[in-house]
Length: 154
Image 1 (cartoon, rainbow, N blue to C red):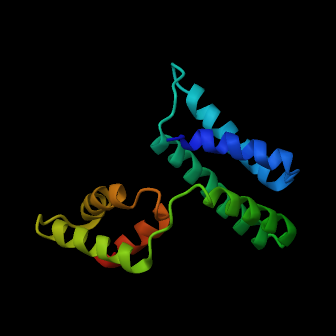
Image 2: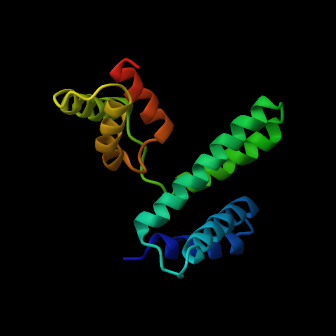
């Protein structure tokens, strides 16, 4: 089975042959971010598919935040470009979790933590520790944190 990085490189070639500038530019930026992650630290390493997914999630988050900032600044054309890049990146990310699935996971985690007697920030940390591995890559972390706070009544 081909890795996600191999798929990105193959798709880059296809986009370049088709002269799809948006797609090829976006994939180039993602591959550059992956390469930067591989060479960061004391020793170069090959990223696993999970690590590549983390990088893709980070790049998607950057595009979401940039689009929002451009909208707030009244720069619609730049916001649309960021959203178009986000759409390309999202093709490689796993399908996002539905609200019902996310709420069910959070409710189960809150019930589990409630038995331990943790309160406030400790409860928040304990719930997030349970929820994060289950939703990794399938739900935005800030959305998860907001919902956990609401579930805990914070």
